[in-house]
Length: 411
Image 1 (cartoon, one colour):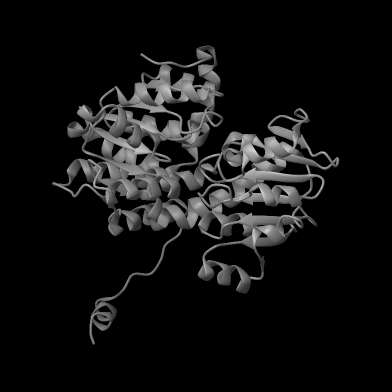
Image 2: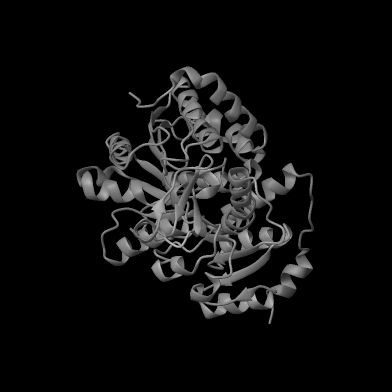
């Protein structure tokens, strides 16, 4: 049983999945290698990631390899109904639709949990935390899970520290082929695609404020500078702030930056990064966008109390008018702008991330007893994905000779 809208759009969704698949050669290679042996036969898998074409292609690869797959979305605004319909037509179970209310979203998570999964892939931790809170009797049958985001890992590490995590979770987000490419180049490109598609405004010459200089923030700042913007970075970590400074960005507290920025992008994973006092300092026409997992980085409650909602001048833009006449624009309801107002990361980038997810699931399937903790992905799997990607790009690299190995291993 599935819960979707617009089943009549399956053909259009399938076109999107096929297009993504043609640009995800590493995952395709893994499918060809593993499918004949059906390694996931008998395994129930639950996937909670932004439900669009790249996620859908990954889900079908697991299905080809024998898994019984249930998919739900990790954000109500990023679910694409035509893609969900295409998955259902292929025999996967789907509980998701675009624009789900908070209650509907929670119900979709709940129904996914109730399928009794053995393996889980999560994006933000909602699926894993719901399983622990609402259906603890299902926990003993779970082999393990994997987490795609920094925000999700923060939540799961807190659970592990409290002794409440009931199975191992692989920190796919911390793998080199994930954060160096997905977080940096994927976020950097897709955030600006989402902002530019939504606003149809010029970036060059504007002042962009990037909150947070982790890997996502670095990517957003890098692409903003490449588009001709003047970039300000705000940070709480002195090392990252120093990195931003020596890379040529202006660094200052948000309280000062608030009065200077034309476009703001939050990438921290924390709440109230742009708070009430910051909102009071915004210039007329300021644009607020979020690239963190949850819609808490921009204080929407404070924005609603300080300014009057004045309609939607364009799709995915909410206008707020302050008593003094200043207008401020919030993109995509403060949710992930690259997915809620765009198509997310490029397919070639997600090819790396989802190949890591596939190998993480295979590792959990094969591994012996593992501690109930957040665990790193084995480095050899990271390197394997990198090697496959290089091969797909037609790139070869050097190998160490025996003499060089002996040299590096000597003292």
